[in-house]
Image (tube, rainbow, N blue to C red; front, top):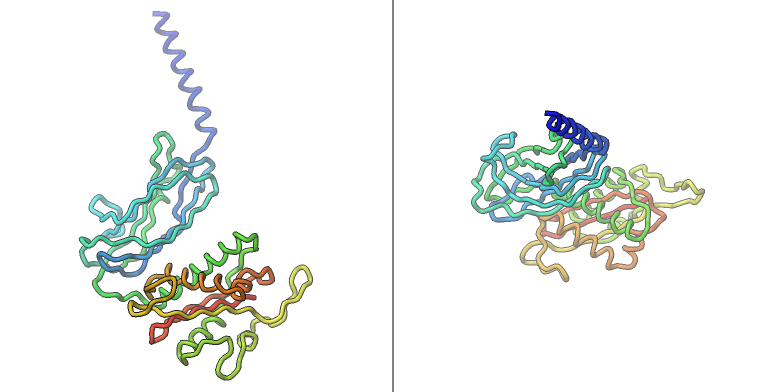
Length: 310
């Protein structure tokens, strides 16, 4: 009996010894911060999707699996339609991931209203997530339809957001400080791209001769500013681009540009800016700290994009 009792005692001690370091190490906590998809999509065609998640825990996660579902209600269940699955590498504590992409909606998806649901789960055994309640994100209802009815306001807004992200990525690559988004600069830019699209011209000067500095004054944006280092900046910078969209238009280097694809529209605009020495200089200039961006589709299919920097 004594050997048996000693063996049991040792076993208990060993279990306690293993558990204590595990508790001290902590746990990952993967949280989905945001999730957005295009408000409508066509079976067999691409749909815009973007999501942001991060590790809110104090321990590196293992590999993760992210799944995009369409659900008839706002609760995840086995009957939901799987649109896409992704394998995600581990996340360090505090690390954030942002992804924007397109996914093909299967032709077999019935036409109806759906709730998009995003779920992210750990796949490594023994490395549990500290809080599974924030691993699922339910988006507002969208429509799977046979008609291309994406709201133009949504597309233009998304193009502006993506071009803002891409602009700061280019600045980061060149050790430039990121730009802060400024709503007044965006309004100045939007007024000009709307005007160019409406009156069919493409110039920094309006037909009346107003330049970017005039437009800044009209909106009340500070025409002369003093930086923290004492240097002064006058007026605002401006980049504008115009290109055709639609299957009947061949944009050099891009071919057919889909006017409902925010990623392609933003990519074309950024490429045009970077391929022009003067536009690239404005976009990357260390003089600027803020930016506003606009996008407008003209009736003839021409797409106008503007950047104002201050």
